[in-house]
Image 1: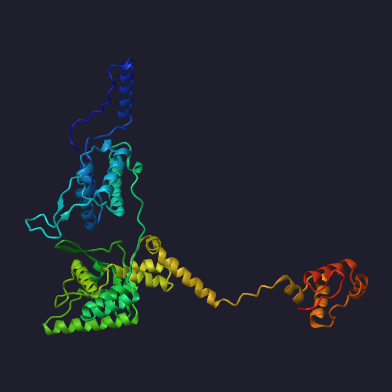
Image 2 (image 1 turned 90 degrees about the vertical axis):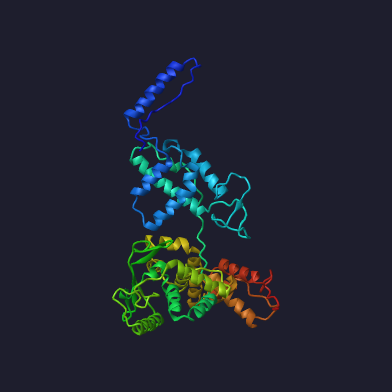
Length: 463
């Protein structure tokens, strides 16, 4: 990278008694590193490594732009000058601590955060700086950028060991999707349908859970109203004023089945698009977009403009939400309806066969499980009544002594054996029932336990 020779150095204190011997060992150690090619092959800095890595990495344009923003704002100012061979656990821990201290990486001196860098008159939007930590998810993104770069550095022999596993980025924050409630969704749709085309866009976002760029890039050629399906394989990306068509986020093509109401809305929307085009003496082409401001639907909507319009709609209604929450609404409603996770993941375009869906919507899956358990309980037959031991013996005696106790107990409770009378001796009862005296004694013990008989075999009064 630097086109300069790279020297391995190690300093031995000259005032020690065995300085010469230690120096000889250091020479052999460094020479061994060179012979085994375990030494750093460059004096390049972290900034140079990451720039080289981003040039060669196969990244989506929007991902590359996001990564470069992180590098520009959070990596270059802090550790961009550090040599790749000098990065270790101590450097990484100090670096992450600084990211968690202040997202602007201030020098702890007070200053004013201005609303713009151009000449302006300060107002309430220009306020004293307050240190706020960088979000945990952003710090983890930066960690992943550095990890990818250092994996390449090991492959290129720029460093001998990847230091990133020694760093400890913050734990991943728990996803907290906040879909609108059913009442809020109804109010949003009611307001959106004041413009039928805009209402259809919001309805489709709510029903399909598609991303905003995917709906902006949807063409009529991908809509089959007879079969009631749409194919999502294109998305509109935006970087400030620059816009372009690209694959979906996970590079998947997915076919979604629509309900009858959605098909009806799309038919009506197509009729309106055809009528507007005819009035302006044009017609929709084979690649016309479903949602467009152009007379012939030849231009897609702008994703940022769509989000801004939705946010203004929600603000008018006093609802704290944004467009992406409609995607959460679709997912949570499907889960609540009992749709399996793999199907939900397929409709949303999540990768990993449902892993992402489970991670994001765990709370809603748990809630759906509770409702499923309740629904199953309501369909189960009534559980059998739990009987006491006395009731069990009276209804279904299992042993001879239980049968004798049940028979005598029934006679006492029915009045066949009057109160204050004595039962015959055990020997006589044994002969009457054809059992041993021991069996009779066990039966009498049960009657005493049930308080039907006293110790002298006399029948107790019934209360």
